[in-house]
Each structure stands twice: as structure tokens, then as C-alpha cells.
Amino acid sequence: MSAPAVGARRDQRGGRTAPLRRPSAGGRPSTLRRAVEIVLLIVLVLAAWQIAATSGTFGQNSWPTLGVFWSTAVETVPTQAYWVAIANTMVSWAIGLTISVLIAIPVGLLIGSTSFLRRLTTPTVDFMRTIPSIILVPLAVLLYGSTNQMKIILIVFASVWPLLLQAVYGIRAVEPVARETFSAYGVRWRDRVRFLYLPTASPYLATGLRLAAIASLLVAIGIEIIASAPGIGYQIGVKQANGLAASSFVYLITAAILGLIVTGIFTAVERRAMYWHPSRRGTNS
Amino acid sequence: MRDTRTAQPASQHIARTQAGRLQNAGASTGLVDSGARMSVRGVSKSYTTDRGVVKQVLASVSFDVAPEEFVAIVGPSGAGKTTLLRALAGLMPPTSGEVYFDGSPVTAPPERLALVFQDYSRSLMPWMTVEKNVTLPLRRKKLAKEVQKRLSSEALAAVGLGDIGTHYPWQLSGGMQQRVAIARAIAYQPDALLMDEPFASVDAQTRSDLEDLILALKKQYRMTIVVVTHDIDEAVYMSDRVIVLSGSPTSVRQVVDVALGTHRDQLVTKSLPEFVELRNTVLTAVRRPVGDPTA
Ligand SMILES: Nc1ncnc2c1ncn2[C@@H]1O[C@H](COP(=O)(O)OP(=O)(O)O)[C@@H](O)[C@H]1O
Ligand SMILES: [Mg+2]
Image 1: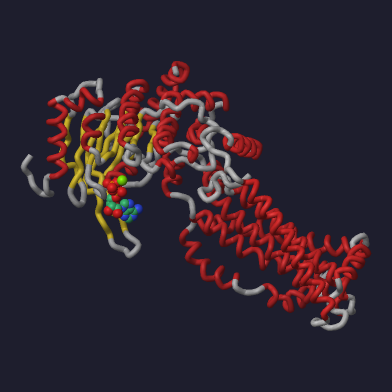
Image 2 (image 1 turned 90 degrees about the vertical axis):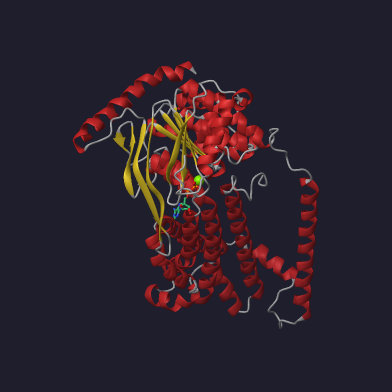
């Protein structure tokens, strides 16, 4: 039944040009201005990079010039090792995030809808989520070695808490009047989940998903550096240790780009999940 | 509109037989069979606050609502009118006493009953289109998609809203949103309609339009209606009977019969001497200090 939902969203977008809703004026100048700002920022960063590299502040050979970086990138990107590293990181990221979603959303919705469970679990969740995943690296390595499995477990540990909390908040946001409306009209249990609980919780879940996705990527790469598990982080660490600064930088920049892509995708997901929300109405495109 | 109603007698008949069966099954336990659509018998309700303080809101409230009758319940803010309506709707069990719908005890929201809340903005789901909101209660009836669509557009037409099924509630004005909530109740084809201060959050002009709309719909669909309001003019103008609640804890202070006929008009009815007199009677009952027995 996801097709009608998509259809409804289309209708709503169509509705934006209807007389009831005025299309926002002056979107164009601000887009242009933003583009100029971004270009300026990039130029500034590249200039700073070149100055840092040539001034020698960071020691000989530790910061490649733009030219060296570029030629190393052109060399590295077509290699199989480069793509295997990305795949290693992203596959464990995706698996870890999926496991977190599968655990956190049902458990969070259950905890959120039961005041007894909520009182029981709140202190535990608050405690657990403040433990940084990195602290658990030695333990996880001891148990599982420097494997993808170890990495996934730590990714789950880092990303399950924001999702769980958001799911709890999401279900708490259900309006009593809305709940009573559903009861009064005898809406069945499955329809209540589908038309009341999930839609109310969806903006919260989407925020949780974005936070979890970013946390997962940071933890994945961090663990690869610390525990020498295969992936981009491992390449960053190992190239650095072998004095291959430029190569290390290629992987570093790759990690940053992946971070931007993940943030972009999940910010867009969040915006879509909130199309009906008072803070979003008419602002998303 | 005729199409919807041709289907109506059959489903009504089924509901009646079910109610009858329940009634017979319960006859040995002494159930009410007064021919009333709704009966409230000695209903009391106490709330326990978070700090464990018990607060009694309703004390032994009793009244009947006849089929196709229009009853208005008035009382000061915080008197427990919403509480009473929630008990009537089967949303909350009373602490003691019983509620009956078509002779059978209410333990869950009755299937032949629809509800319109004061807070339309929260009772309509912002993530669903107007049409989805209106057809939401029809899902339990397992009707075909086309039938649901037809019932929805007929109900929207009946409340004076045109082709707005694809809009979202938040794209509409407050008055239009409350009309959608009324359309949702109408599409459900209930025998009885409960309304909790339905017009308290709309402007005066919209309010009298909606009052007349409800009166017209009542005639058209022959529904039993119970409306809670704190507006005494509105209560007298719309109803066949006004039930005045007061006191702390609240009980029925006075019942005022409103013999103003079946045709009401904002200008004509409200300037009738009988209207003014009824209005003053209700106002006196509402204002009279608790414990004062003078009628
Ligand atoms: N769920 C609740 N828990 C505790 N007290 C409540 C609850 N609902 C209502 N009350 C109290 O009961 C009284 C009557 O409330 P209500 O039925 O909403 O009155 P009215 O609709 O007449 O304004 C109020 O004092 C209110 O604070
Ligand atoms: Mg109230």
C-alpha cells in the first residue's frame, strides 16, 4: 500500500500551485547567492590548503600540495584497492544501520507506547547512549578480531540509541485527540499503526535515521583506523604510517565526500517525511 | 445522496438485530429497554491525578436521549462535559453507573455512533488528504474503494464543501476543517452523533452557518444528536432539550424542554418571546449557586 501514499504526495505537490497555496517568491536569487557562497568557500579552503602545504608548518611531507594530491588521486581512484576500501566501509555501514533500524524502531515504538516500560528503560538508555563506541573497541577486537563483524557490532552500538530515543519521542507525540478519534471510529489495530502511529513518528524516525547514519559512518571509519579493520579508515591510517601523506589524503577526502553524500540523502529523506509538519508546510520542493 | 440512504435500512436493520440480541442476552441481568437511543444511569467519574489525589468530576448523572432527539448539554467550563461525552462514546469507563446505547451497555465505542471533537485541527490527520480523513472510519466497514470515494464526496457536498478531497486539512480554514470533521461523521452513516463544543473555535458567522448546517443534516439523515456547548443561545436554538449540568462534583441541575418546533431560523427563532424565555430559564439554572433549591 505504499503506492497510494506516493500518489498522495504527488497530489499535494500539485496542490501547491493551486490557488490555496501561493508558490514562494524569490527562490531564485537566494539559490544563486548560495552557489556563489559555496564556490567562494571552496576557493578559500583550497587556498588555505596550499598555504598549509607549502609553508611547512606541518612538517616535511605530511601535507601534500594540491598538485601532488591531485596526481595521487588520479592514480588511486581507478585502482581496485580504492573501491574495495569504499565497499568495505559502506557495506558494514549499511548492514550496521539496517540492524539498528530493525532493532530500534519496533523496540522504541513499544517502549514509547507503554509508560511502564518507558519509566523502566529511560535511565538505561540515557546511560548507554553516552558510552562512546570507541571505548568498546578493545573488547570487541578481543572477541571478534579486526573483522567486519566486529565493526558492525560497534556501528550498531553507536547508531541504535539515537534511533531508539527518536522512536520513543515519536510515539509520545501522538495527540490524545487523534488517538480518541481512531478509537471512537473503531479503527483496527493495523490501521492505527499505519495511519496514526507511524505517520506521527515518521519525522522523529527520519531525524533519528539521519543522526544514526552519520554516527555509523564516523564510527565505521574511526574503528577502521584504530583497529585496522578493512576499509577507508584502515587505508588512511596505514598510508599515513608509511609516510604516504598524499595517498592518505585521498582516502581522507573520500571519507569526507561519503559523509556529505550520506548527510544529503538522509536530510532529503527527513524533509520528505515531514511534508505535512507545521514547520515544513510549503517549504520543501 | 439517495444512493447512500438506500443502503442504509439494511445496515441499520443488522445493527438493530445485533443490538436486540445483546439486549435479550442481557435481559436476565436487568438491562434498560426504555426505547431510548442512549441512556446514562447514575454515572460518576473520579480522576486520580499524578500525585495520587482523587478528584470526583461527575456525581450520579442520569438522563435519556430518545431516537432522533437533539439534546444540548450545557455547563460551565471544567464541569465535566467532555468527561460525560467520553463516557457516552465508550472512550472511558465511568467509575460507577452505566451507559447504554440502543439498550446494550456501552463498553467500547458503539459502531452506530460518530463523534465530532472541538479540536478539529488535532482530530484531522495532517498527513492524510481530506478524502483519506473522511474515509478513515469507513475502513472497518470493508466497503469497496469506489463506494468509500462516493460516500466521501457526498458527505463533503452535504457539508457545503466542494471538490477538496485532494487537499490537506491544513490548507483549509478552521471553519472548513470543522466541516470536514462533520463530513467524516456523516459519511460514517451513524444513528447518533456526539459533538463536543464543535463550534467553539470558529468565528461568529461561521458558527451560525455551522449550527444551521447541523440542523439541516439532522433532518436529512434523521440522526440523534447530543451536543455539548457552553453557549446557551446555541443550546436553545439547536436542541429539543437542554440538560444543565452544574455543581462540584457535577450532576444534572435541570432539564429544559425546548418546544420551538422543528424549523429553526437564526433571525426568526432567536427573536421569539418563547426563545428569550427559554434562554433565561437555562441561564438562571446555570448561574444559580450550587445547593440553592429554588427553581
Ligand atoms: N484525564 C484526566 N485526568 C485528570 N483530570 C481530568 C482529566 N480529564 C479531565 N479532568 C478534570 O476533570 C474536570 C472536568 O473536565 P472536562 O470534562 O474536560 O470539563 P469540561 O469539558 O466541562 O470543560 C476538570 O477539572 C479537569 O481538570
Ligand atoms: Mg470540554
